[in-house]
Length: 200
Image (cartoon, rainbow, N blue to C red):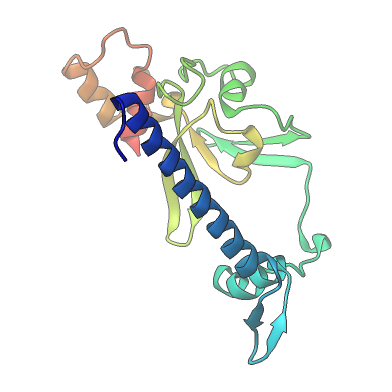
């Protein structure tokens, strides 16, 4: 076909491309419906059966993910007491607010103002603290943004803030000492976050 100008040619190409895309969408939709949603025959324990999609997922993947759907909620130990360690001190909270964040607990309830609040969205790192928890390899120490971490997510764990790492009175940690000697801070506001991150 010979076009009068470039605009007509471009319009024809766009129209053909849209037809091809529409055909592909129709084909893929039919394939998906016939393959996954129309109760296909699935081999399960040496027997072909017709199963809904959720049962297919369970039979194929639960053995790999070790999922168990037959658990009993009475087997779970429930408690209204949150127990954690803050700078080595055991803290028990009865009926803690599930909306409360670790940063506000540290600063407002415990008065440890070394943990700073900056962006309050996990970007600046000024609120970083050290979290110690049990793992299959023993005690695992990680740095976390306390402004994003719910308080209730720390049950049975140990939290170390900048005050627990070191101070002028109690003695500076190696990380703090090196920052002081090398004049490694600027305004100093986010320095506690640097130290707790390096401390891990």
